[in-house]
Image 1 (tube, protein in one colour):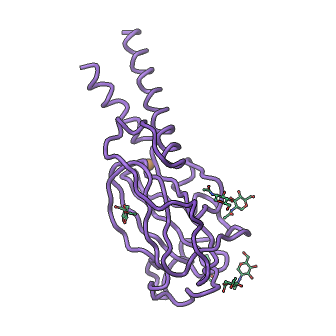
Image 2 (tube, helix red, strand yellow):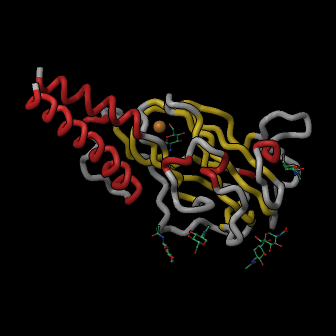
Length: 207
Ligand SMILES: *[C@@H]1O[C@H](CO)[C@@H](O)[C@H](O)[C@H]1NC(C)=O
Ligand SMILES: *[C@@H]1O[C@H](CO)[C@@H](O)[C@H](O)[C@H]1NC(C)=O
Ligand SMILES: *[C@@H]1O[C@H](CO)[C@@H](O)[C@H](O)[C@H]1NC(C)=O
Ligand SMILES: *[C@@H]1O[C@H](CO)[C@@H](O)[C@H](O)[C@H]1NC(C)=O
Ligand SMILES: *[C@@H]1O[C@H](CO)[C@@H](O)[C@H](O)[C@H]1NC(C)=O
Ligand SMILES: *[C@@H]1O[C@H](CO)[C@@H](O)[C@H](O)[C@H]1NC(C)=O
Ligand SMILES: [Cu+2]
């Protein structure tokens, strides 16, 4: 009974705190958990230092802290996209570099992103574009952006690894992970879970 309360409590608290974190390409600014509900994680202007990104055969990596989630990737060809309007087509629809797709698992994910076949006008060698990640793990839409310069001759450095390492069980997600972003996730999930357990034990003492 105590064990099941433990699992239940830490699970609930994890859900309340969990989000997602873009790892590669680097986001507009340092990850801000509390502002992820806002446009571009509340970094309103494009970064001056854009990341080079391959026009074809690219990939993105992120850490998911929710077990069940969906992800779409919007694209803007505006030099300094400051609003969701700047990520729409001429007919006002979301301009998608990757269609929404659902996935399961907490941990690190690598998602292929070939921008050369999106058919979006203005996407080409040397173009400045911004991609905006739209993630939903069940607690509303969350956003992070990366400002890019596309290139035909750029290859993602080999120290940026593309692999998935996840678990669908949050209770075991504090086990060591092979990637740094995985560790971050595990730490952030473990901390509130542990605090929750302490709170629960404190309640028991009071009662
Ligand atoms: C791309 O953005 C950089 C600044 O981030 C700017 O210096 C450069 O002129 C832009 N390139 C194009 C093709 O607009
Ligand atoms: C841009 O520079 C800032 C400040 O030095 C840094 O935090 C950020 O990671 C850099 N972004 C990219 C895409 O290199
Ligand atoms: C970007 O969005 C802003 C605010 O909605 C709008 O005023 C501006 O015209 C847009 N820029 C482009 C190039 O579409
Ligand atoms: C790679 O492509 C970019 C964008 O077209 C260009 O600015 C750069 O000079 C190229 N670099 C090499 C080494 O060819
Ligand atoms: C990858 O190596 C480059 C130098 O080649 C370094 O600047 C960068 O920080 C490394 N990135 C990671 C994620 O280790
Ligand atoms: C990782 O998982 C995502 C979501 O299920 C999937 O789209 C992607 O292709 C996977 N990546 C690799 C490298 O297997
Ligand atoms: Cu969340």
